[in-house]
Amino acid sequence: MVTIVLGHPRLMSDIEQVKLVIIPDIHNALDYCRQKIILPNGLNLEDVWAAWAEQQEQRLASPGARTDFVELCQAGCVPRVLASIIAIVRFAPQLNEWWYETLGNIKAGQKLILSLEEAAMALKNFYAPGTAPENSKTTDFALPGLLSPRGLAAHMESHRDMVMFFGELAGKFEVKSFQDITRYLLVGYVRRATGRCHDRNISGVLGEIVGPADYDEVAQRMWRNRNYERLEQHLSMLPDLLLCLSLAVSNRT
Image (cartoon, rainbow, N blue to C red; front, side, top):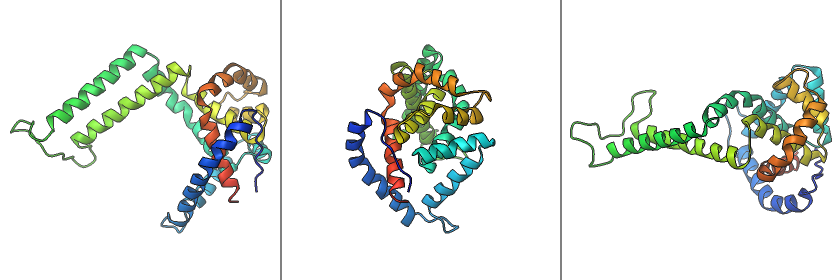
């Protein structure tokens, strides 16, 4: 069984209350995955998650990064949860381009939100029962591989909501990039699970998966000193939930 150390000073009060509510629900979800969701190859989703997490560890090409992963787990991180965070961090640079294009220009973002709202409303009004012209298609059909009109309208509204959410996140929480969020998740989870920041181990993993290759403990400590407390004020519930997930998983192993 992996030992979880509650070392973050705020967690000694808050997380003890939060986990009493959240962890039983996580246990139930894990039990459901284990007992009810059986894949064609006979495995359940919980087994697949464990196998996938091991693959994520093996994807760390350098022995140093794999050693850092192992040491973080030995210090208190749960491998499956840590591997999942690392996968999100690995994917962050691809989302970061979208982040800058969508949120880098506030006025452009506001125009996009308005355009999406107008386009979605136009589709819904045109295809609303009893409002379409006689020569129009009133049924919500879709060609193979394409969204139906109402499906397209719903997709536009979902994209609008996403742009609005991340716009508010960037402005209110002073988030500079999606990479900052994912890096904070990693640091916040490690700090909660182990009681320490482990800048050396984290820098070894980050240098491997997102670079630069010479990213070291000093650079990671500088990033943490500049950004961690600011992000912690607004996003602390996210690593809190990851710790609850870790506690639920570790109690089952």
